[in-house]
Amino acid sequence: MIRLQPEDLLLVLGARPPSDVGAWLRDGLRDAVASGRLEAGAALPSSRSAAAGLGVARGTVAAAVDELVGEGVLESRPRSSVVVADLARHPVGASSRGGPADAPPRPASVGAPDPALFPRAAWARAVRDAVRALPDAELGYPDPQGLLGLREALAAHLRTARAAPVEAEDVVIVSGVAQGLALLGEVLAGGSSGRRVVVEDPASPGVIEQLRDAGLDVVPVPVDGRGLRTDALPDAAAAVVTPAHQFPLGVVLAPDRRRELVAWARDGDRLVLEDDYDAELRYDRQPVGALRGLDPEHVALLGSVSKLLSPALRLGWVVAPPGVREALVDAKRRADLGCSVPEQAAFARMIESGAYARHLRRARLTYRRRRGLLLDALAREVPHLPVEGVAAGLHLVVRLPDGDAEARAVAALRGAGVPADPLSGASARAGAWGVILGAARVQGAAVPRVVEILGAVVTRGEVSFASPRE
Ligand SMILES: Cc1ncc(COP(=O)(O)O)c(C=O)c1O
Image (cartoon, rainbow, N blue to C red; front, side):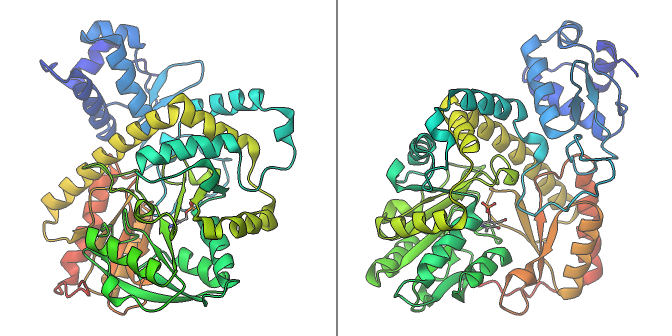
């Protein structure tokens, strides 16, 4: 194994700047790994000797290394040193910790976070501490509404992070937004307000499937640059919306439309199902507060850890209006008798200890930087490419001129290991061509690859962007 010396690092990093030494170190190392100037498998010097050799604080070295390990650029080997990751083997920064050697990797979803950022050590600590502290009484069948300790911790977190009135008694713990929607769909289908439910167009095909499976009839209502067209709301029992960061278009529901949507719900005693998609992953400003804040009686707020920690945990919540809470808890009990108590207790620990907030800050910074680098490269190399959405979340939408360009872009991106879905598959309207691109793991060598693929598709398309945007 090649063992790098501090001088080797100096050689690739160049002269030490007078300020922002952390960024110099982090960005320089990242570039050196991505460009192959630091060879895969080479071991870094210890943080002590690197700090001495580079003339920086040891904490600065440790922070930069930590971040790059999180990004998958470096690998931390147990009881050994930190080594340069093999980005050719993991082209989009996939975690270096693969599964069984012969298990083919399952394609990631466009909205999935980078698994390399999952705070393994903090989660493992939270599980250990939480399980040790669990009273025997909590090791029977769970409270189907959810562990009280988690509901309390979440309520406090959501009051601050989402500016929404939330008490522990309002919260129902579910195994993700998917289950929350399915259970609320079941409650709605069994109610007396009818089976029609408004969905955004475009929307997640998975969400539509869940609602249909629950026995509801979905009524698509178009989304434009200001979110759901509230002037086109029909009569229905409920509406499912993604106001913080519309999936997939990435727009934010405008303030007047928020008020109109809530008035629609209140006037007809309807329910708004607020899928709080990407709300805590806003990069340019504080996220807009939850719709629930406008009317807690008619808005159910649904969220999960899927984008923030990992979708593998299957852990989410519904902040339920009083009118549906009991029926929802009953539906949860009938579905699976409640969520895993040790997992709930561990998540409560993560929130209470501050580890969750620390992870969110770090994830936001990492994704913001990756998104910025990708958008800069696209703007430079393919300046006319229409990339949509506000600075938030884990995916981008690029409009394309026709179905052929869409199919080529999706196939090429998937071939390069970048999650991609056709926009047309998310819309009931003809002519909504584009690609929904999972950007969470796009970094290093994957950036020019994505630029190359989209550039080639657009150049060969040679068709004007007559898009169905309102
Ligand atoms: C818009 C939208 N809402 C909800 C979900 C489901 O999320 P969860 O993992 O919390 O069940 C998805 C899945 O990717 C989604 O795309």
